Image 1 (tube, one colour):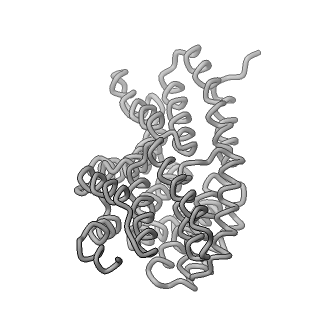
Image 2: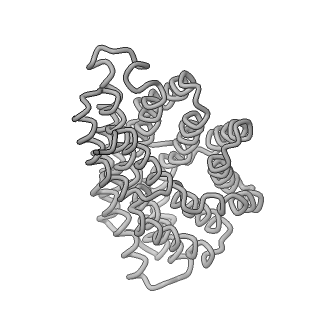
Image 3: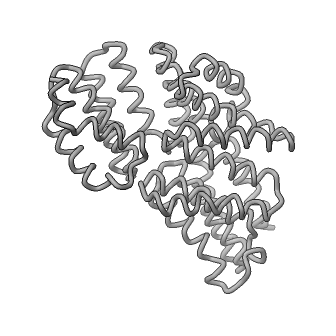
Length: 346
């Protein structure tokens, strides 16, 4: 007897809950076969959601966007109300992930549209776990944009929700997001303590790489390069084991910055920058590409000069994305391309 779609979907959820995203993505083929055989739109919607989320965490951003968009369009294409073919729960998570993707693509207006609508849709499901997932995505959305106050605000809302419903895993994720935001705001010691308290709860979880990268960035802000590198190496190892590559470009960018702090050989530093830029260009992920290129430019100028090729890359990125950059990255871009900043660095 062949397993039912529900049984297969439960297995996908178990795999993804452990953060084994490469395995989760390969398992989606079975979901689609079962969904097609059933001829039920509900199951096809869930299969699309599963592949979209798996593709996102594997770093296949264009594939993820296609699946998530089709998931959102599916109800209207079948002329059925949302609740009858998969429900607000499935659609709210799809919208939340699509908002993250659009933030990475620097499609800010559309990203915010989905970002704001997904919580309202999640509330209709009356499912505390779905609500926690969407609230976590809200905080992560602002963390991607390096917006401190909104990251902290949504993380605290998620904490309150998780305390009320006994959701320990998502409470710990909120603690990591909150601690990271506090580090960026200047409350470094308090932020590091909060992340340390919650990191063990995320062991094996689907945000493990995000948590490890956040702790690494915290140590970076504390000017403790050794600890920062140790946590980042754990994040890279976890990424290799599970296929969790959504933040791989960011990890190599941070690694290059940390190697620079340690005054490691220039070739080693440059190789990390090149990896970050290459990964961001292949995916593609314009937000990460801008950040990696800006970081490379800062490093080159700190060595007493500037690379014309990097300058040309920044000028091109500025022309493409100036009106779409988050405030933090726009400020960095303004400083990088201003003539005064170049003269002061030479």
